[in-house]
Amino acid sequence: MHQTRGIAEDELIRQCKNGSLKYQEMLYKHFYGYAMGIGLRYCINRDDALEVVNDAFIKVFNSIKNFDSDKPFKAWLRTIIVNTAIDRRRKDLKLQLNIELDNAGPISTGASAIENLNVQDILRLMQQLPAIQLTIFNLYEIDGYRHDEIAKLLAMPESSSRVYLSRAKEKLRNILRAEAHNDGRSVG
View (tube, rainbow, N blue to C red):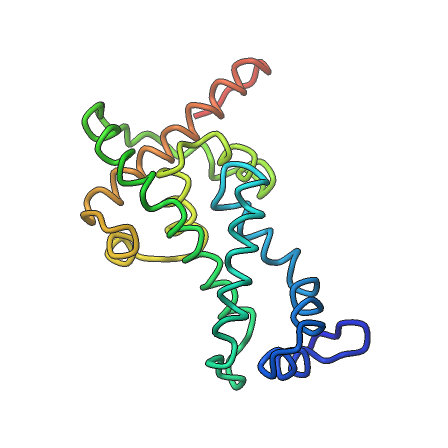
């Protein structure tokens, strides 16, 4: 179990359930890095990620009395952060859905150029994706959601989730190819 300056995680949670602001601050600081890591994957910039994290922690503190202490806190927190990021974007995503699908071109199914990248390369490239593609790529490829689950979360047809995932992968391949071309390398 993680420790925060000599205080066990379950004690932090118990004190937060009792409404202690001091322990809420300690819990926030303890999980801030973890929360920002998730927030940064779903947001285009650090400021948006910080807003998502702060909004998520407000939700955590408002509903922590309902948290089942027999279950992992990190998993519960992660779900709240992901849902907060999605909620924050939902209106923008609906607008983008209509615009991007109207301007849709064909989807390429060429070889995957991102298979040989490390995590830092992928995260750097992901920041260049449009918001809808970034969100769906995160949900499907990183967090392991299925297309039917993504469709329900984002209130879109399942086929749209598949299209945006394909476009995200294609855009990542194109960016990678352009970078490789500029470096004089060959990418499949």
